[in-house]
Image 1 (tube, rainbow, N blue to C red):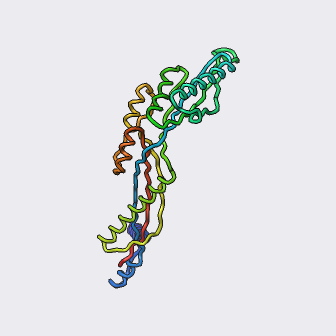
Image 2 (spheres, rainbow, N blue to C red):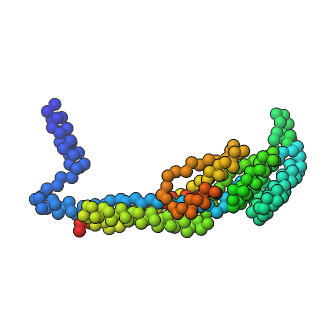
Image 3 (cartoon, rainbow, N blue to C red):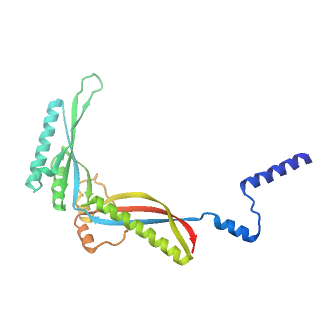
Length: 259
């Protein structure tokens, strides 16, 4: 029994010696060893920019159904022609209306291999530049039973430039935090690596657009989140139309050095 206890004790000591390396030497030698261990700190910089949207892409879906595929296609074309004509009367040019390729779905009965009807769908994207133009598009959903609301996507000018600006300011914030650490802790931080979390985009509808969606029960509603204050002119314009939010994040790893 004592033999087994001795073996067990030896295994325990051996396991500890493998898990935690033993440090031996004089105090000065130990201090020199600890100084040689690489120390690092990670700093995260984040930025959020609100940009006034200059246009929005509204998606409508034209859906027609008939016993004949040819008739369903013809009806769908007629619906699209009426949409273009109605929007033109409201001041929206035909070049701002784009129809995608149609899709057809046969519907079968309980018995038999021949379809009893055909459903044809076509997504139509309309570029609007004001709430007035959006209201003109919304009126089509109320007036035409074949037209359904599919969604809205706000866009801002110079998208790539705003993405670059968001990343640049995120890096600046990481650098500000790094200088704060250096000042308060009396250390020096040398950049070791940097990784970018990418730029996320979120479109927020302004209140005026929410009011315009009263007839569109399927409309997506996004609640604005708190964000840094931008130019007052941008905020005022956003209340009339909408805005696009660019969020950027960068992570910088620094090596800690003594001054």
